[in-house]
Image 1 (cartoon, helix red, strand yellow):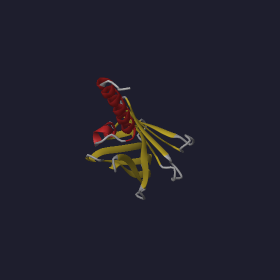
Image 2 (cartoon, one colour):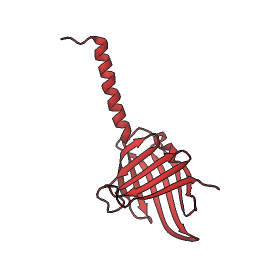
Image 3 (cartoon, helix red, strand yellow):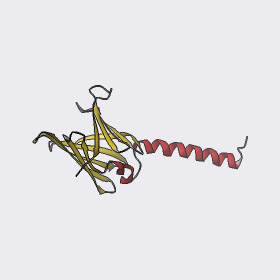
Image 4 (tube, one colour):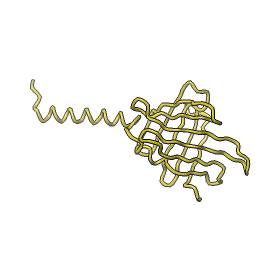
Length: 155
């Protein structure tokens, strides 16, 4: 049985659209897909601050500080980078690293990266929620979750 030409074309378009949607979940091209993370972000109490800036079309640099009053408790350099067509998160806690996490989910306002080999965290999620930037770290099974809600820096 011969498939009519228009029906065959429509089937090809539907199949290709499905492929594009699946690829988009883990790695759209260009830094614009993560532009929502750019800027200066701080927790409401000011104890944690993150700065994200575009370095290149395939690179966004980040820096986090955690303070207790005037004392620096923790710092971390980070970056989102495109490697072989997909996003990767590189963490340098206290300047050591990198620890690499591969993107497993990416949408218009969220990225989830994972590294099952790392002791903790194994999953990191960044999500834009209106005026907030939310971040969470956990084990792969979702246990030991710690979450932060960042707002745009006041300065």
